[in-house]
Length: 99
Figure 1 (cartoon, rainbow, N blue to C red):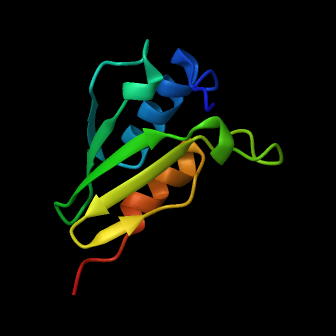
Figure 2: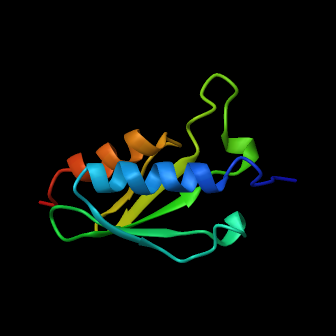
């Protein structure tokens, strides 16, 4: 069974800092104490809404322990690999405008 023990308050702070540093508007749903329900909502430079959710334990590779987050957008549909906080922020910031 997957666990979310890898999502700590420090990791949540790290993600928030990375999103802010990338110039993205974001908010979380306040479930840091229940990571299985944790979701961040982020607006990219093109006005699209993204969600960032924590990866489950079976998605995390030992060689990339800081890669804990997965971003998704439905307009058009994009889903990232499991990324670090900094890379998730960059992925959203740099996503090309829909054509």
